[in-house]
Length: 302
Image 1 (cartoon, rainbow, N blue to C red):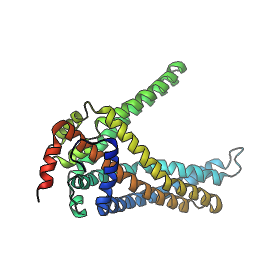
Image 2 (cartoon, one colour):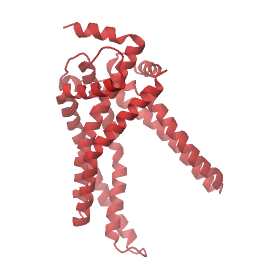
Image 3 (tube, one colour):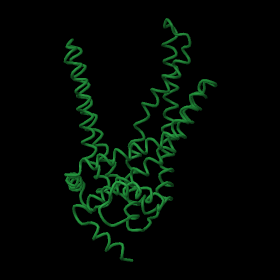
Image 4 (tube, rainbow, N blue to C red):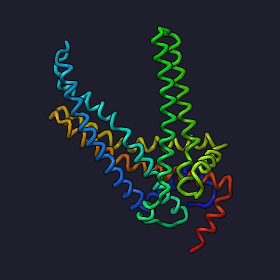
């Protein structure tokens, strides 16, 4: 990596180079953690889908116009089970991102870190805790928006209710984007700086001042790229699972096929996005604090 402020192309290219520089950690560790998490999610999804399929099948038996209650219940149970088990992957992705940031930070200096060193980083639990705090804040905002909308509809104020739904959705999306960018550098700061929790969070928050739009643009572009690449694996798996469901009616096989695509897509996306976030952190500090001089000195040391 050039030890100077980085451009867009250098950050994206550097993220790929960071993954290739230490594939055992960036891909190996990511694949192991994601596989375990998706396996647990798949087991939960199979269990929930089985419960929902029976309940929905019984509920649809006597409904007029329902020609195939079993098929309808299978489709709905898969969707509901996937939604219910989806949040299980969020803390896993958070922990994995924190661990991979350590590897990227060493790659900037042209060094490699072993998997044992990475997994022994205790500050990763701070990253998980902060992620859950941000998620809680987002849930509270979303709950307030939904609650106000439902209250207006209940009071038969349809005009105000629709206005709250539309304007609130836009404001909520803007608030989530703003919060995501302002907290984007918190995970690398927590992993790489040996300061107390709240002091590190406040410092990372200050680092994003004056760089909001640049951070938003680069992170959004990186997210779109990994979404496109991930869909190359997830979409065929979902398509194949749909065919299998139609031919065999096997919910279990459908969920397993979808899980395989999720493992590959999530491994690639988590590795690349972790590298992008780490390099954005390094880039902002080089621009504002002259970190490039410190890194140059560190790179010349044995």
